[in-house]
Length: 72
Image (tube, rainbow, N blue to C red; front, side, top):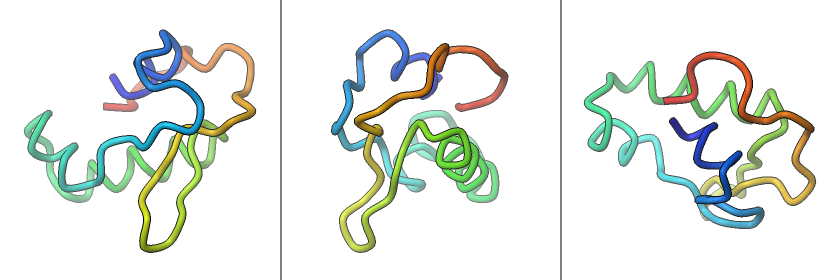
């Protein structure tokens, strides 16, 4: 779901995405799952994390960011 929101512009580049805790609350998922979502999005280059600030949509998104599975 986060991946799709990035792809459709709901979360444009530079926008802060929901934290691990907020993902848990919004989607009813476990902490480990929420952390895996963040790790996966970072690995794909869709988000970056600023320590103490949060995670944000990358300014230079890879092509076809809506593909793939997961992403809460």
